[in-house]
Image: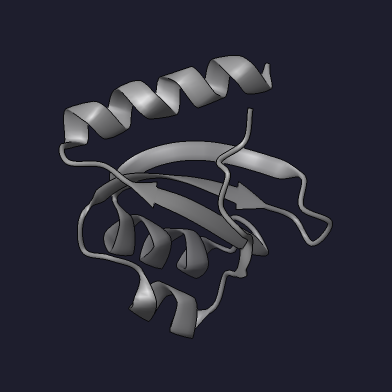
Length: 81
């Protein structure tokens, strides 16, 4: 099951608006197909995704801890398979 958040274009303004907190994020293509699910400190992770052109869109949800983000990301990956 995908994250229940709206897609945002993966661009500099979006990355700048991302929280500097742990979370889970999904990268998608232009049509909204999920390409990847990962976790980490959101702003740092999205900077890297933008630099490498890993997707066209992004959506995320914050978590309280990196461990919580890791567990939630694993659950979402399993659901997408």
